[in-house]
Length: 131
Image (tube, rainbow, N blue to C red; front, top):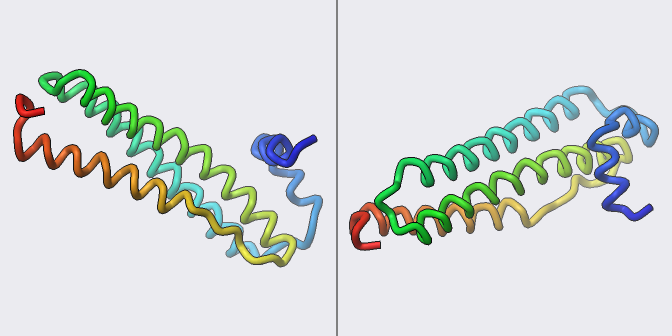
């Protein structure tokens, strides 16, 4: 079985993580869980923002509105998936005594949010009719 499939299986069977390595200090596991929850809150905010753009900006040209909404919704989905993946990878690294995994995802997410924010600034400055 490939590595991705094994990782996804751990999402639904976290007890299997305990089968390898040593149990880390519970404070580190709880910190890992708090980080997971923060990513989930971020995902929910992005999804909510996507729905808000779609529902509350009807005067905006459909293509622009759909692009902004879909960008936020897709970011929310990716953020939620990344949250559980990162939680599993960090838990495994702590149990193995390895360095915690690094990711480019926070930078990618920041860029997507910045692009949507710039687009919203344009909408605010020039009004709905200008876009």
